[in-house]
Image 1 (cartoon, rainbow, N blue to C red):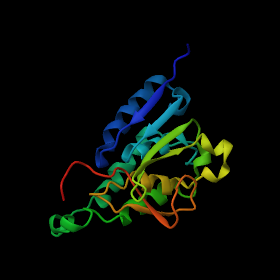
Image 2: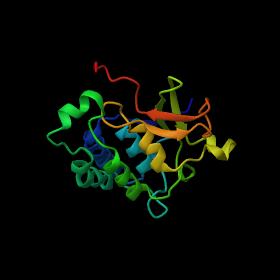
Image 3: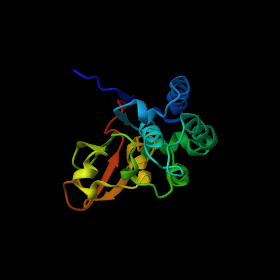
Image 4: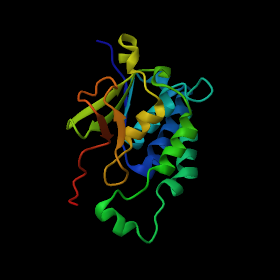
Length: 196
């Protein structure tokens, strides 16, 4: 039976530097693009952003290298995870950070690239808050139904919206796979274990 190689990249906010650094070394040792090595690349939250970066033609018809993703975190992390004197009070009733800096970095990084640019099958996790069910962005579904093609910025925003850190991302229910009518809110996870 043939083996299937899966790369699963976990979340962790700014700590995305760690898997990106490890992937830099793996790619250097293999001397191949990671999309050429793995049969499936999966990610959640910051891991989802990394998976989209290394698994799609989002940069001049090719993927980003893991080292370029390290630069993304180093250059944009301080602005995305910016704190001020009101941060502790704010997070009592609101997410800890404003999503504007994250959305700006994602727009600059992915521009208008779409999910159909996947170079290997991708699986990016999210969560539908209204339906209270997991929602998975699966690149292989585009072949059977082209309406499953989304902008990478939207997918990255949905997977990275950890409720205690950023507001959930709102999408129209007309998106394939979103069941109910009206707008849907997607986020990384429904609950992170902390009481609010």
